Amino acid sequence: MDSHYDQVMKARAGADPSATRLYFAYSTILDRAAFEEWRSQHSYDFFELPEGRLAEAVDVDLVYDFPSRWWGGRVAGLTDSAGQKVYGRLFEIRGQDWPIIQHKEGFVTSMCVERPVRVRVDGQELEATAFVTNPRRASADGPVSTRFVDALVRGAQAAGLPAAYVERLKRGE
Image 1: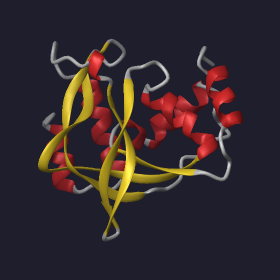
Image 2: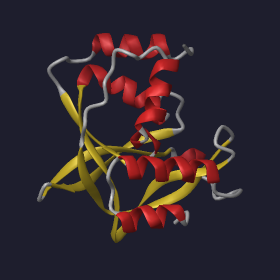
Image 3: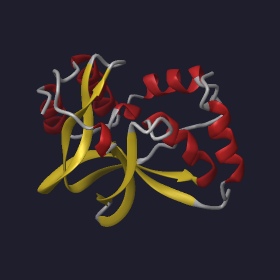
Image 4: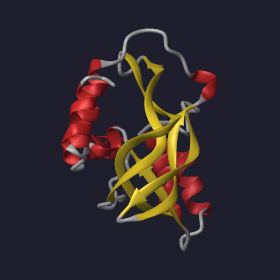
């Protein structure tokens, strides 16, 4: 358990249990085995990430803009890019569980910020929340983390993202 657990649990206690949020996940949280390990390490074994639905965020693209000591190189966020798309899964998260997602995504430590994205799922266009690099911490310094790319690819494959997109991820694009 880390020092953020109490902060997350306090936020959960104050959250509206009847509220839900749409969460667009495009990164390493899609690697279920890795997520479950993280969940256990942080004492969130009671939380189950729902199945989610295949989705694509529109008019955004991946950008490797956060130098991470833990990953040993830059990791991905999203940037506005007309006509581009990023695949992922759309999850409906209960309000009381949102602080756990915020912890996993690095919001609690100010590595990331929340931003709205337009997503297409099951023939509809919806607005969801994604996590992107905090602009104050963005940098193109250093190499892209190969370990992060490997985890991104594992997650994309596990999530059933399109094969052509997985191939793009393998190239670190």
